[in-house]
Amino acid sequence: MDSRIDHLQRRACARPGVLGLGGGLPAPELFPRAQLSRAFLRAIERADGLQYGWPEGNRGLRAWVAERLRDRGAFVAEDEVIVTSGAQQGIAIATAVLRARTIEVDPECYPAALDLFRARGLRMVPAKGPLGDAVTAAYVMPGVSNPRGQGLPEERRRALIARGGALIVDEAYAELRFDGKLERPLLADARDRTFHVGTVSKSLCPGLRVGWLVPPRRDLDAAIAAKRELDLQAPSLGQAILEEYLAGDDFDARLARARRFYRRRAERFVRALRRAFPSFRMEDPEGGFCVWVETDVAGDDATLLSIATDCGVSFDPGRMFRHDERSSPIAMRLCYSATAIPELELAVQRLERAFRALARRGRAAR
Ligand SMILES: Cc1ncc(COP(=O)(O)O)c(C=O)c1O
Image (cartoon, rainbow, N blue to C red; front, side, top):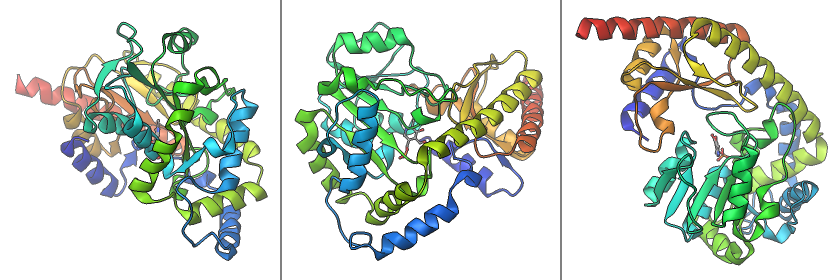
């Protein structure tokens, strides 16, 4: 990540009173603290909760992931699932064993995946261009994309299945589609070339650091070896807590409540944004935590972030999501997930102030 942006974001987080619209954080009030603390107590009593485990992860969790994928139409055996330290590590392992050197990414895409592809020397091409050939891999976020909060269009889905090439399919937010529809996973139609990635970070809590990867069968051994090289295994305690939690709570009912909760915040936030900034472009999020906002304002989004922090609000600058790290025209990812509705409305007023200050600064410089 751009070190200037990193510095500005840390400064904003450290500043009391700044309303943070960045980061993609789940709402802390949705963390099931009572259930997790009971699960924790049961986990530390278990033989495996505090002990080393296998690189591929706990059997119970692998079975849970495989069963949920089978329910959606993908035949996955529990032995084909690797428990990872979050979805991010699933993407990293997929990238390590991938044979392609070029990868298609959304024109606006999850920054930590872009950073990873960049660091591994993959050439990135935006998915809006001509469809790549079979040697081009693709990174996609079906269900709910980050930052746009949109599903994968049916036409693109069909094209990805038809054309061949490895797919890294990141379902980090898929269970948080507001309509609750979980599509047939791409894995079901492209089993031999899909690296399927999931996580409980967004749906439950990121602190457990538990995600998963289902690689193509021929890459399973290489993926487990890559996992072992990285960190030996996903955290034993996180896995044991999650298994105990799943045994004692209705996870699907919790997901349904979370979807309603985030939908309410999204609707109120987008309404306030549209009222304040009628010329800015944004789509209603179909799920997830954020809205992607595009403007015609030319300029430096880091300068805007710095001004906004002084006005008491922060956000994720658009350049983080663009594979060419372009700042202008200014765009922003604004997260509504972790901020209560009255504060979201206040944050919009502060953003208005920040844009006015940016315009004044531009006029003074001319
Ligand atoms: C699209 C996407 N994938 C993966 C991740 C990482 O998830 P995890 O915390 O499970 O590593 C994130 C987190 O922001 C994300 O937005």
